[in-house]
Image (cartoon, rainbow, N blue to C red; front, top):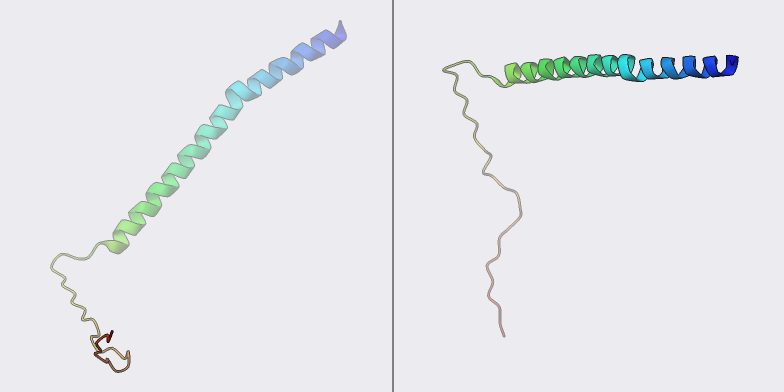
Length: 76
């Protein structure tokens, strides 16, 4: 009889842990991860945002040092 009561108690604790505590912990972890991701996205947007009216012009270096170009024709 004592063994049956111990097994029922273990089963009740197991159910309580996996039906109540684990979902609460998972929800808490997901909420923290979501807030962390939102904060990172906000920081990235602030870094990428340029003040209004700012203009930036960048010129590419057209000087190439590939050596000499030789024009040739194929002879058959």
